Image (tube, rainbow, N blue to C red; front, side, top):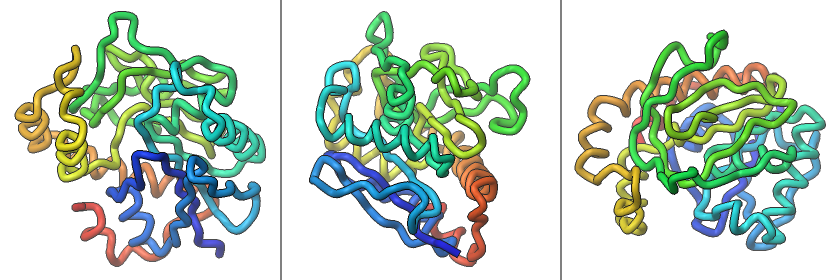
Amino acid sequence: MRNKILVVYHPVGKSIDRATGLLESWGYELDWCCPAKGHPLPEPGGQHVAALVQGGAENLSESGHLAYLKTEMDWIRQWVSREQPVLGICLGGQLMAQAFGKPVKPHPQKLHEIGFVEVSPRSGVDDFLAGPTYMYQWHQEGFEVPERGELLATGERYPNQAYRIGHHAYGLQFHPEVAPENFLSWIEHAGHYLDYPGAHSKAKQESDAVHYDAPMRQWLKKFLKRWLTLAGASPTDQGNEVAAEKH
């Protein structure tokens, strides 16, 4: 079985998080790629069984013209069109939406989502979220759902929270992969964002994590397993997942 998963990251740096930890604990080899640094993106159907496109600091409404982001969008379009499994998180989901012709825009009132925010399954969709769930967020722009896509989850402030194209490509606006140490690091390095309208204070985020982190962690594990199984790459080695999902 092919066991490599491509992880596309951005200039803000690699995100070592619960998603990457779980994938490695299940026996996958992660192949890190940063197009902004000139790393070439592979052709679909090669040695990678799936691809994960991580978040980043870029705002597509301002930075979508950058050459490396255009390269990523062209690659995502090709990868998805060839029915190769792709998961885009936050910026990754926005890139996928824009790759298929949908705009990424700020909130009309310039509101942010930073902290744990309630996300609800779209009516009639019962295989993504079991019910309203608080997911971690850090963004100031949102995507529209591609014409080929299906809206999966909604939110009050940003109505489009997740979508899929077929059964192999998913775009998420939220960050189910982050552990408290991840978002505390973001606050340490970019704490000025907490002054923006809609952002939650550090104290509230820490308090909310006590209640919402564990359900989000369990959802991520189930979601990743289902995504990879539908992609024909079901995890086979789960011996280390307990340690991985805690970090």
